[in-house]
View 1 (cartoon, rainbow, N blue to C red):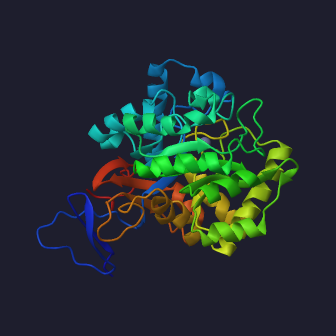
View 2: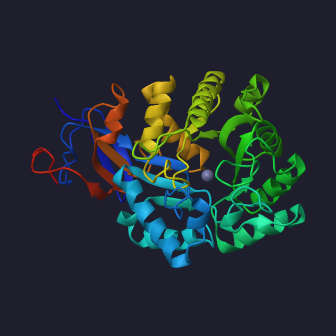
View 3: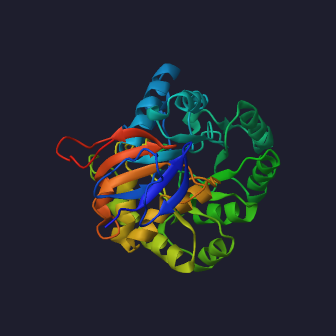
Length: 382
Ligand SMILES: [Zn+2]
């Protein structure tokens, strides 16, 4: 039996043949008995934060330390097969320097989209990343400053969040009109907008404002997690992607009881959203705590399957749907015209999703950037 063949030219997939014969004279890489997937796309990370218990203290580190953190985090993404990352919050635009560095050395990290410091309110969620504004009057100016710096998108904190002392995730931080002013200015400058929104009313306002992705989408209220059926239908109708960030690092400390219950309910809400036709993205929010270490995305995919997604649905949420949500038309699929960002794993993740943890090789733009084959796998030839 012949093996499926992926033909790559200049870093781009030009043909996929399920039962192929290699074109004459073309060098062949035989990956052996592996499953080839698109490289994973993590649409929500914080590379400058090192996954420690106190993100506020970690963010106060000198810039050189933040850059080192980010380099280390970027490398660990490739280790687990994440070939594209959208960073949704750094400090001092450190990820723009990282983006340059990785553009020169593809084996140093994934393809990067970066937002710079998230826009937030005075002492609001993630103020410690440096993007807090005293007054909403500065919102459009804040967008323009980021555009001038060269960010790929705008991140705004539409609600409070979990990791910021004094912030309440069930409270909105901006009115719909304020969010709309950010969207209008960002779109005028060609930049999409990602809105962090836990609170139900923040999700409503983000939808009304026309943001491009909702981050977290946890339907938080003062009393817990309360999915709103009408809102879910409207999000589905608007084709607005929602990044679900319910994965945790197995090596991290266990969740306390209240967090565990909240995560279960959030996962149930994600299943409701899927059933209603919402475009679900599986993202990690890696970096923000010791339960959110870099490279955790595959565990988030597994978590979705445990919650009731099919393996194919969960994989799409971390590949093709994630890429589309990020506006990346050449990422997230093994298909002609797409970048040859590939992940080879041992086993079949469609039958057993944990096979995505058995990484054998990772390619970026047709270049091998990781290889975990060994002498024990002689079929693994280059
Ligand atoms: Zn985040």
